[in-house]
Length: 289
Image (cartoon, rainbow, N blue to C red; front, side, top):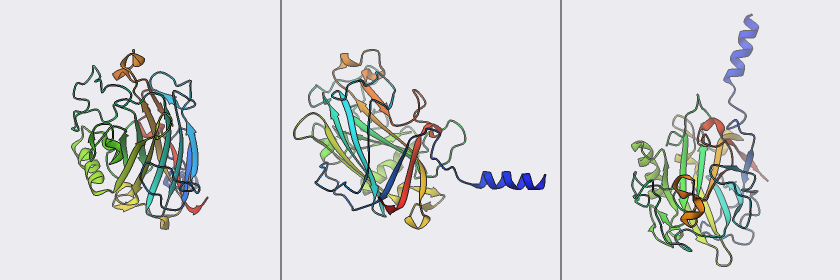
């Protein structure tokens, strides 16, 4: 009996090998530091892991069936101090650029840069990381370095304001849980101090836009209380989810919350995609690809 108790205790002490229960994984290897300018320069992301979507991702609203309507190519890597993502998005209609800036029926304050606004209303990407790789039940992001959900919006941001070219200055907005004051303050501090940086830029030719996004290990990836990820900790799994949101003309989202056209997720399931347990996994690897 003592032997079995010891084995169970040892098993429980081992961290999760995956960052979430959804069986989709990305690996971020060490690579060169990119320039965060919303442009994919030649060779800049050649040392990164690539991935794509979104027809095989999880739809929250109307399923995406046409890659000309909505699609993405993504890259992920790190430079030993920061984690980096890039997204090249195909989108046939850009909200607030090809359309007027109409508002959802659910919130006439959707574009206010306050806790009453909808940061994710517009053409946008969301990045969600559970750096501590822990959950107890159905909880969502804590809104601090252990787990968070941040938003990059093409036409509005904390530093760029609201308008067609807002994302070229910074596309970041405070994400969820934005109604929690501590989360709001953490996120705003990360943006203002550039602990997290992102730029979104409309493609010069063709439909869509590009996002480049950098996440500092400290203070944004807190693996244990007061301890942030470093390569000295070795290869490490974290929870990961990514969302691509698409707003077109209002009528194209009829029947969906906020008249969203699409919102597709890397991991999870409809209505539970923001719960930590339903995320996929990001392995931060110390070696090169």
